[in-house]
Image 1 (cartoon, rainbow, N blue to C red):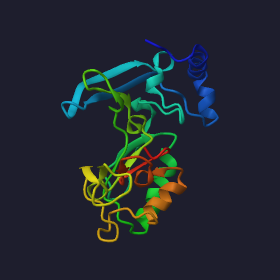
Image 2: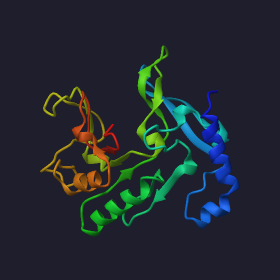
Image 3: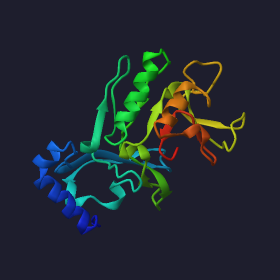
Length: 221
């Protein structure tokens, strides 16, 4: 198994040994264990396969694929923060993003903006090229807790969609109908603007053949 660089492992180990000092300084202490439930998406079978539970040491056994290189967030449940807001089922995001996303959503809810469902952290290999067996090879941004889906029943994921129009094919979630359905996200709407201000990009504006109108992440993918 490939391991993170020894210097990073040593730094995390020192952080654990000096835990009381870090806590006093208000810094986050890395956990001792990394655990998560995961699966792999098979494009031939069109279903999840290879479901399993993973548990290993956090500071000396994390592999590069388990860490998002941009944010440093990991697939570990121990790195996630649960967000509970009035009228919404709770969900989890990486502790690095959670405070500002919680604040943005709370601000919107307090003003009556229609937010009915938010989905965040879930660990699965749903991206990347498929291998010879049809299995995807990379974790999604949801796996690191750096992506969230807002009102998926009204903001679908479309493919064959370089520009949104009648030729786009809905493959997940509900139809996107801005201007008709209050819960559909408009490009200049309050939800999109608030989450962009929180540092996220909207999947409805990503380049390529897909448009993911429910989705937000640092990259939009």
